[in-house]
Amino acid sequence: MAGNSIGNIFKVTTFGESHGIAIGGIIDGCPSGIALDFDAIQNELNRRKPGQSEIVTQRKEPDTVEFLSGIFEGVTTGTSIGFTIKNANQKSKDYSHIKDVYRPSHADYTYDKKYGVRDYRGGGRSSARETACRVVAGAIAKQVLKDVKINAFTSSVGEIFIDKPYQDLDFSKTETNIVRCPDEKIAEQMIARIKEIRKQGDTIGGTVTCVLQNVPVGLGEPVFDRLHAELGKAMLSINAVKGFEYGSGFCGAKMKGSEHNDLFNADGSTKTNLSGGIQGGISNGMDIYFRVAFKPVATIMQKQETINSEGEVVEMQGKGRHDPCVVPRAIPIVEAMAAMVLTDYYLLNKMHS
Image (cartoon, rainbow, N blue to C red; front, side, top):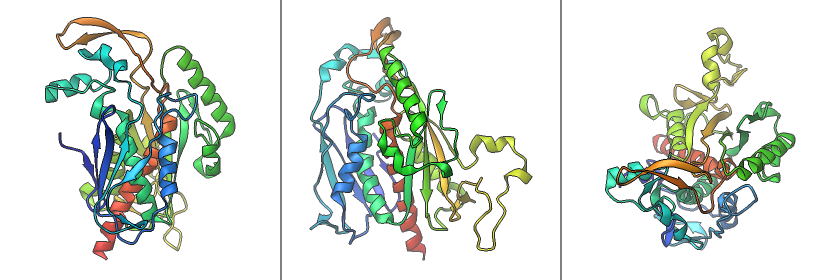
């Protein structure tokens, strides 16, 4: 299986399956001399881990990261950083009923046809459990970037949206509620909706908005390696993501050029920021902001018609512990992927300078 790595200089490779012994990763290209805050790294994992609230999967995993290499006395050495996260709460029997059945909207069918074998225990390699590895790498990337501020938050659940621009939100309130929405009134509505959906044995989608501030001018390469293209690839590599837009996004398609152009101030900043902090694929120093759409979790606790490996039509129903809405736990994953992309381009810029 190819495609387990992302990045050019700051390169991250992950390994492991949902119900295997452990998951983990290798980070190549991390600069030496970074004094790591291990509590900050573990806190990022805690934000993503299952079982943290009543509106997420109740699988209980401590998600404690163990570093194997690349760090000496708490400081990065410049060599490969290896780490593992043990799977402590495996219940593979929860998946025995789908050993030969293809779950709708999962990777079961495509994995089986491509590889001729699949790990049916929680989806194996296709499980969102793999994203814990990304969070570890992203937490280290955040510490390389230092001055860059990365804030993601739940901006919608189903038809419930924050109706304020991000500039009017207090990001310090994001972690004050279990849905991770900085608008407290909207957060209450989102939580109520997720609870309602869960009682129905169903799931619901939503969006995550991410804002990157204090990004230096000049990150990104022209043509194929544009900064927004790499951010888009990073976000679309996250499980359940169905869409990515930055800056004015699809709303920009409705506008006239005279409305959309960001006019310059004398210092090179712009009066508006419909470009989303990126022009010509290169960061311009303004805030970079984007939105990521997550589909409803595919496993639902309702009976559905599907097929098995013999091509027979069968009926199945989801079992086990699953998120009714993946969005709240996706917040640290989105931040981590953004941090990894920015760090990669930051180090590339240092090579060019």
